[in-house]
Amino acid sequence: MKLQLEKFGKTLISRELGSEAFKAFQPTLREFSKDEVLEIDFSGVLTLSPSWADEFLSPLLEQLGDKLVLLSSDNLSVHATLRILGEANKRQFAIK
Image (cartoon, rainbow, N blue to C red; front, side, top):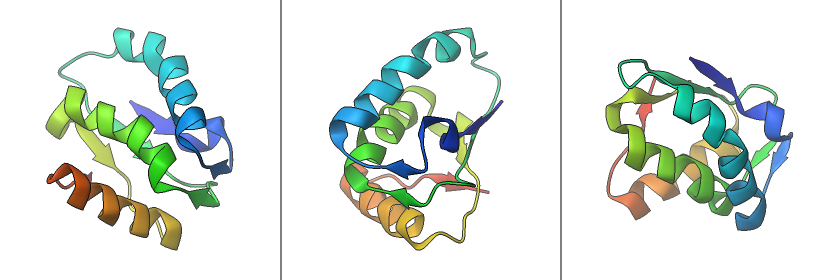
């Protein structure tokens, strides 16, 4: 399954908005097969803040582990945010 983060907006900032996006994604996540890989696509996202990503991506990493794959992006805010979260979680995201 591929998830376009742009569906939550082009500017993904604040813990509150990240938490709301994660809650909105829960029904889809419940239908997700545990054998399936969830690919996160950052295309179309202009800004990704560490706080938004921590509320959305960190719980996904906790729930899915290696079944969560982030698609590569040339967006510098995405790179910086993923580095920060990797250090905070002491676990790197799988990037394809």
